[in-house]
Image 1 (cartoon, rainbow, N blue to C red):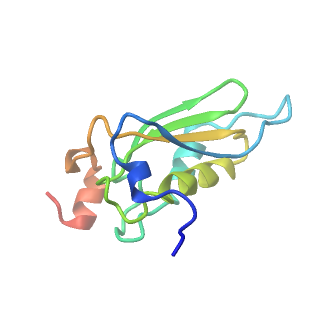
Image 2: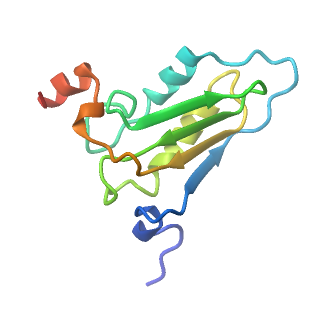
Length: 131
């Protein structure tokens, strides 16, 4: 059986970056999305096995917006063996790219520092009963 696309090994910590891309350059003069709009887009993405969005889970490590509306995001997963490892960065890139005022989006999957439950918001901790 041949499986197309990335395998789990592509997402294991190895020093090689995995980047998902979505969106396109903005027309010059377009108003650039603010931080709140980007965070709202991030909050629409959920790990299918966890009833908390990825932002509240603390999976988003860094968000940078350029003067041209391009957005770069560094994110992690709860574990390298996460069943949606191959899909999650693309889901994040597409969700943010659909935001008005966002151009090209790059989402880099990183493993350093490793995710811990300490990164979760208080809201996520309450929802998951993980005090």
